[in-house]
Amino acid sequence: MIRRLPGGYELDDDPARLDIDAIHHFISELSYWGRGRTRERVVATIEGSHRVVGLYRAAEQVGFARGVSDGVTVAYLADVYVLEAHRGRGLGLELVREALEGDGAPDVHWLLHTADAEGLYERFGFRRGPTRYPLMERMRPNAEAPPASAG
Ligand SMILES: CC(C)(COP(=O)(O)OP(=O)(O)OC[C@H]1O[C@@H](n2cnc3c(N)ncnc32)[C@H](O)[C@@H]1OP(=O)(O)O)[C@@H](O)C(=O)NCCC(=O)NCCS
Image 1 (cartoon, protein in one colour):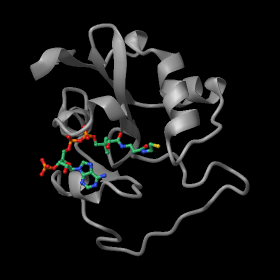
Image 2: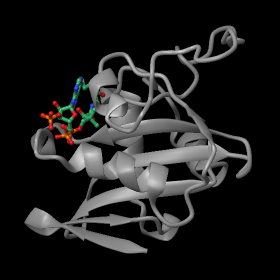
Image 3: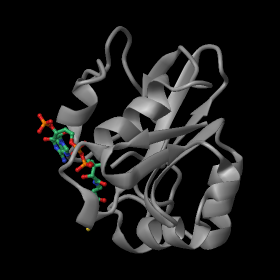
């Protein structure tokens, strides 16, 4: 499904359209959560996601988000980014909206990690947890710091 946005931008949930090199470049070199992630692991995260959303301007991949879910109870939003040159014009908001509420997005309990974009996620009803029960996490020793994460 393609959703057109103002300014010549497009959201597309087709995994085949993703520019893996561009996503790998951002996550491994520019993100604060996935520095050093190999291209192979980027491909594996995409294959293991229930849904991916790419943000494009013509042929260029300018943003990305993915969700990992069982489709029934819970989902985790990860690797959300918009390239710096394209930030501040509502694209992050539409990218997250598409990941959470677009066709094929599960109606479940969503989780995410973010270092600095709480305000954006609050717009979609996210609240600093735990909401009902304590939240526990099991870190992987020597892994990328936090598990996968949203920007
Ligand atoms: C978080 C991110 C996806 C937002 O993308 P964006 O396209 O700039 O977001 P939008 O323009 O849609 O912003 C939507 C709303 O969320 C808010 N928002 C965006 N980023 C925010 C942040 N970091 N903290 C708090 N609120 C934020 C905006 O203020 C805006 O609210 P407004 O409409 O009331 O002004 C983007 O900043 C990003 O990719 N961050 C990655 C960070 C990163 O990896 N940095 C390391 C680079 S070295």
